[in-house]
Image (tube, rainbow, N blue to C red):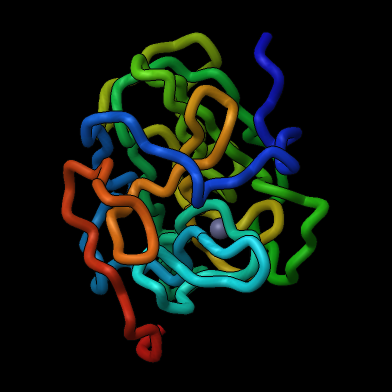
Length: 201
Ligand SMILES: [Zn+2]
């Protein structure tokens, strides 16, 4: 079995990494942006301080993924689907953890999460999922857009959100967004708008 990539934090140097792939990702959140959810944090590109792919501050220090956030625990209780961002094989499922965390605790990590290995050597991770919401087991194949679980607040989480994280070959984190302070190309097939207004949330 492959070592879980979160052991490799020390190797991360995302700013020096070329993405080396065609766009292949669909938006992993069901629903409509700014109606059902908003993106509140992007990948941090700065090794010392912080900045996101658009040179803004919509991230926090060391953040390695993208946070798609629901408006409330009520929205989580209604059930908000998380979708496979691309075709692949399920390589990891944790599904049994408490899912109403409201206090940040780094030691709790992604909480309930799913990992998918894609055919182009990329892995996608879907963190903080709702307890017992995972649809698949390790080894099963999924198709892009299929429901794989639901948004929760398990792990190191203060409110219901999906933390989506992308790795190349378990070696390093990749930011799928194109941006002036980020990558020169996008890995998204879906347009996901860069959000600068979070006040309504
Ligand atoms: Zn996150």
